[in-house]
Image: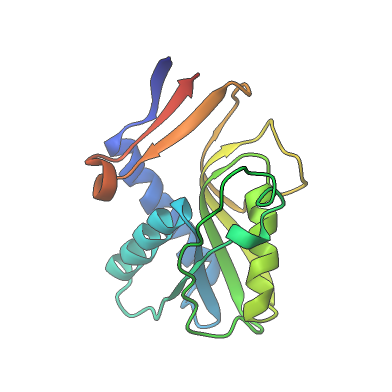
Length: 179
């Protein structure tokens, strides 16, 4: 198995900062905007984004939630073993809000499609934007595009993008692994 580093710790921090500044530029005071992290891996990024936004602009009122998509996936019945749901925590209505949906890697678009379906159980947003750390742009199954992207990569189908988080893996780093 070959692997190479796409983004190291220093680049990782710069990307998080850049994404946060783009969000502030577009959403200004976050008065009508909310952040929703997609379980499981988008939660790490959404937590980091929400935390950094609060550091950059402490007066912002950032509403932040977690969304589980397990039973909205189009493949959940196809897997041979029972799937375990993660926590959904959205303690506010999404009605007429500008939602910033966050996930770590955008690949086929199927996870985001599932998230859009699940999200509608919490209200009808005014607008939905997508923020991802890595966009693997060549492999979409659905016409889904991110509004905010940390890094765009071209990869082949045998490669996998692995995101390491300092909270769980000891160090922020993004790898591309050829299996």
